[in-house]
Length: 540
Image (cartoon, rainbow, N blue to C red; front, side):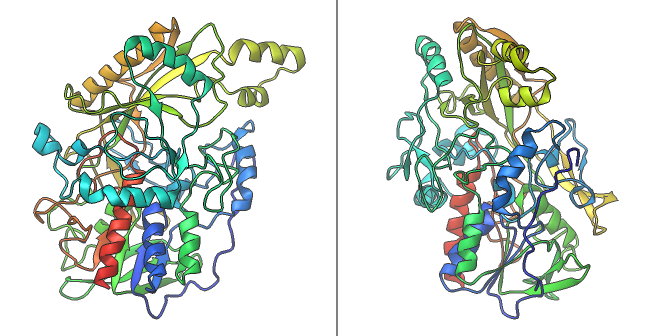
């Protein structure tokens, strides 16, 4: 890499041979797979987890942070890229897939922002309420107790101060982070404009919790949290192993095999670093490989019984890929803002989320990391002493920005498929992402920009940049490629996340989302995973 940095990984288990007995084989060790594995192992089931990437050394997080900040730093500090992670982007908008995913024990939770909100009640009923998208085969009431369970498992800091949030049953596990200095600046304008600000639920510790320290304020939450205060799925991998589960790293699954009739999955075929191939048999299989690799693996698992791919009798595996679109406006004001002193949001506004004009939800975010970072500017510049101090005083501390996540109604033509013209390091076709921003989403982005500019105008800010609608890009929340539903002809899995075509195959993560709202998806991923674990436990 550019500065000589290479992520150090733990050696991993020398024995990567299959377990002779497994009740459950889980493919993927991100939050969904790790939660399922930990819950089932704690209930006495024999669990094997197969992870494509390595196990990173938690003791290396400070070194990763330093590498990220140094001049000439690599684009990522998690070893992504190369033939292993090759992909194609074929839609109207380029989709930079590797910009926001990690292959490794813990998955993309290793470098996520850590914001965790519940979907609103309307998100489960988009077709019934507005005539767009699809209804979920469950509602908020079905998921409500699992949301609370997920908040406890991840460790969420929050407050019941959001007048637009769906009903809850108990307080958050930890108190919310206090509003930042720039939040207080925004609050003045929002009060005058009649906009409601409230706290942001975060899966990072505002106080010591679950063996992890409180946030130390490094401000590099993405790509790496040096203190361990932010949740990663590594904690549930550790719990799973403590309860007897086996976790194999660097064993990318090549395909899932079924019996002769194609009625049940019999084995996960995986490769090892030494080039060998093994078959892990199990009674039940859980696919938790993310919204892109999940459909890819199902499509790679085609057979005589499943000529179009496993669990794909509906033809919808990979279809209805959808995202959250980021919109933003930023600028400078003639007063201190203290941006970049924390690397995550502490205030938001959900006031426009349930507004039906347009239907797409909008979640406003008051960014705590607007403008240049003094540390990055200092280490990347050529100035020293008084000259550097003068530059920093002029450039730092006066920037503001308002971001937004904008809902995207799923469209059939947005999809993940196989690109046979290009292969990965194992000779498999790479995933090809077809994605774009349609007119409905553009209008919602325009509306978000209008509100964002109104806030900055109210503060007398000089607007320096705008993201949207033509420049709006993805928030890297891969959803919808194995959608859930009651009708096997129009969905891939049922409400329990069990595949219609193979009753011993379960799909967890964001791939089953019929719609995605405008809320960060990880808490819903976790809640659905815990619910699926309960159904799996009853099945076993």
